[in-house]
Image 1 (cartoon, rainbow, N blue to C red):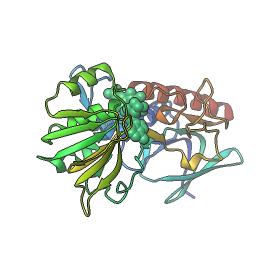
Image 2: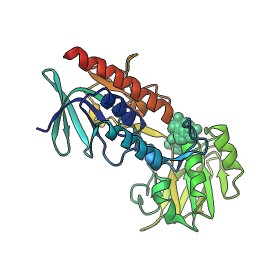
Image 3: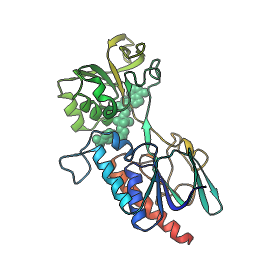
Image 4: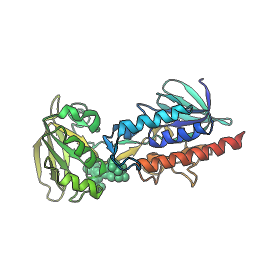
Length: 307
Ligand code: NAP
């Protein structure tokens, strides 16, 4: 059994890092668990333009590192472990990871969400061979190539615009004839000479042996099908909450998001949730940070009432 903490935070995105900052500044013994790198989805974003205080924008990597540094400065201990289960033993929670079992008086869930897959033939087989869910990670591999981007939301437009730095042509394939993305991103995408659109269409398969060389498209209005040659498929069709390890622990909604009360407490006293993993969250960095603060203050009150 590893050490015991006052507050154990699961997830190191904007919500988790802000919760860590507030908890450690309150002199609570705070640990943060993250699978990969601090920053969560933000760390994989090229530029953040809507976080107040950065009129020129700030890179996802930069703001993530700065937030992590700030939490560490006040004493948060970082662990790069994957949480597998949580159970209550007496007054404490036991959190089992892929490496150890840790104990805590209170838990803050900030595990975020992960990119959804389309679920068509060829997708799984060609991940890393032309199929990607991360423009910042994989964009440079597509220098001088032609790619398709699936989705019509903010992620598809923002990541697509970033990808135009590398590619010669990018075709957005969207299942409707209207984008969901915010007006400013729509305008930038529609006026970018490298970006083209195929409307009312979905991908029915991804082709290629060893690497992507094309996709099969279907027009959802006419039923017409066509093949399109492409070197890469970037998928941005929304996210699913990272809550596998919470099944049977706290109340989740039908989509798997954590249900919280007004003070961000879950159905289990002492377990709080914030950011994208939470039902009703608006999925912006600034609101994730706000929720991280709120969850930390509520967890602090819980821990202080225990003592
Ligand atoms: P999203 O807003 O849910 O958009 C997903 C897009 O994918 C939609 O256009 C949707 O089509 C399409 N789609 C969903 N399932 C599909 C399927 N099975 N096949 C084909 N297309 C499918 O997801 P997101 O763009 O990842 O954004 C998630 C949240 O993060 C949003 O709240 C967004 O505002 C926020 N975000 C903000 C920023 C920013 O502020 N700069 C950047 C990224 C994300 P329909 O439109 O037909 O539903």
